[in-house]
Length: 172
Image (tube, rainbow, N blue to C red; front, side, top):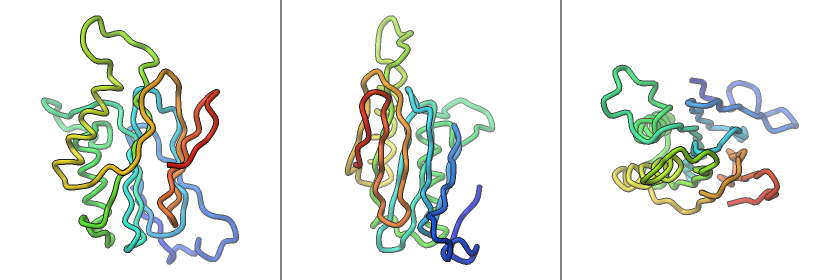
């Protein structure tokens, strides 16, 4: 996991640095870097931001819970991924009481469930529960549907731009 800050020399660059967040990965920035992720179908991108501390983080989660999984990749699961991201943000100066969340993804592009909720819905239910347990308010979301999404989290402003196939772009 990399933490980007102005001491890396990127702050003097005329272009804003872009940092890719892969599937089941997370990144934190204390600079103006833009955190990006793509390929969100039933997966969710969870963006956390503390305006006062200037700390932003993004995790790309695939599944709801790591319960019963031995030695899990924390970022793969909504429950452990959000908690890990939050702890890393606090480690670099974020204040939990000032952090808010934005979420996008959770489509039901391929519904294999015969009875019950699809994985996108279950992912979102776990995200909401985990954020509530951690005391982080969810201030905006773009979830559900049957289309994929790509995200850009602006580390300077906390704006989350959601680009959807055939749906255009919007900032939440």
